Structures are given as structure tokens and as C-alpha cells.
Amino acid sequence: MKKEHRYHLGVKSNVRILSLVDSFAMEASYKLTDFGANAQRPELREYLVEEQDVHLTAYADPNTYQLIEYVNKLATILNRQHICIDEQGLIKGLLNLPEIKDKWEKLKKELMQVNPIAAFEIVKQKDRELAQPVELIDNLSNAHFMHLFLYTYPFSKRTEDILSQQQWMRDRMGIGFAIPVLQTFRLSTTEEGKVVSVETILDEKKKIDKALLVKVTGQETVQLKHFTRAEFLYEETGVLLTAHMHIFEQLNEEYTTDLYLDLKRNHD
Image 1 (cartoon, rainbow, N blue to C red):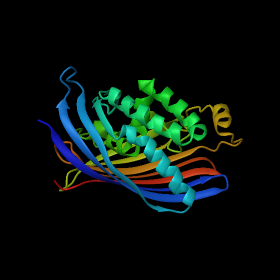
Image 2: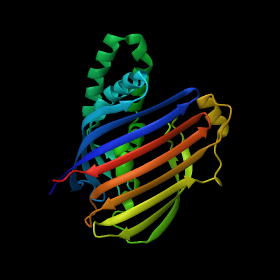
Image 3: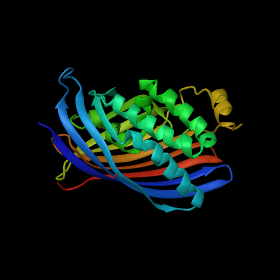
């Protein structure tokens, strides 16, 4: 029996890239349909994620509005994702890939008609992404809503009080590289439900390819930092009720991001 849940997501971001210092806030609403176990692979859980509204609520620079509106327009091809997730919170299948590709072909024609020179690199990059489902699924997992939904997915029904683990996570600065981190999960029970608190820090014992970062970003100095603090509230059945997350990342003192994510399930 399928179950439907509606969520509201708030995003606030402060970004510094060299001389550019910017901030913005945006809101979005989502409908999540839980179909339960997948018929062909019952070890996977099947969901339909529908992004129903995204809009900026504040921005410091007019150019930010134009940039984010353009990014959001590109993201409309992914506003409906039929996915399968394993017990570890990893997306293992995208069931409506043909639908997404059809949306992209229509949007691509529109972008090329409006400004083919400006759209050329974007089109080439998106064509490559859609031709590689692994890369596409990685990008889906990194979107704000899915990042929150999957972050403590394996712990929604566990009973351990404290659990620590090492992991590689994709950066939140938009560079596209993996960061080694140490995560500590603390589980507790309240009258409202199960609380999962998380602290994630950079694992300084692991080696990072700084030469590659310099090549990709053009930044000569790498002083990598990462810190995440988050709290998730679940019903006893494992349904996510709220999630609050603060992420700070730094490539160096001239390249930082400060991100606040707040997710809340609407009353049915």
C-alpha cells in the first residue's frame, strides 16, 4: 500500500568565491510517494519524488537571481524521480530515465533556440550526464532534498545509541570531488519520535589529491575544511518528520560555503 508525504524545504546559503561574497534563500515543496518494496527486487524500496514548487525568497546580488533561475530551469527535467533505494540509503535505480531524457530533449531545443552560444557547454555537459546513469544518480543524491532524506536513512529503524563511521562524501561547494569524513550518529527517543543527531568532520588522516583540486579550481592554496551538524526526527515507523542541517565547507579562506537546510513534513 503506497503512502504519500508532503514536505517543505528551506535553504539558506552564504558563499564566498574570491572577491564575490553572496547569500540567498529559497523554498521548495515536495511530494514523496512510498510504494514499499520493489516488485522485482524486494530488498529495494521504491519511491516517487516530485518537486512541486521552487522559488527564491531572498538574494543579495541580482545576478544570483538570474543564475539560480537558470539552474532551476535546467533542474525541471528532474522534478519527477522514480527511484529505488537500498537499506544503506543508496539510490540503486532510476525507473523513469526515458521520461527524464524526453524532457531534456524538449528543453535542449528551447535553450539552443534562445541562445545557442551560451547554451552550448551546458547542453554538452547535460548530454554527457544523461548518457551515464551512474553520474546522474550521484547528482540526484546530492540535491538538497535527497541529501537530507538519505543522510540518516539507514538509521531510521536502528536502535544503537552511538555509531561512528568513516566515509567519502561529495563536496557541497559544487566543485565535484569526494571529501573523507568521520561521522558520529547519536540515537535517542523522545515523545515526538526517534531523534538521530549527527556530527561530521573532515578525516584529516586520509590523503586528498590536492594537486587535482588545484588543477580543477585554479586555486593555488588548499586549506580544506568540512563540518556538518544535523538533527533528524522520525516516526516509529521510520517516516522522516523533520531535518535540520548546517554545513560549512572551505577550500581555502577565499572559497567557502555556509549552508543551512530545513525540512519539515506537512500535516496530512
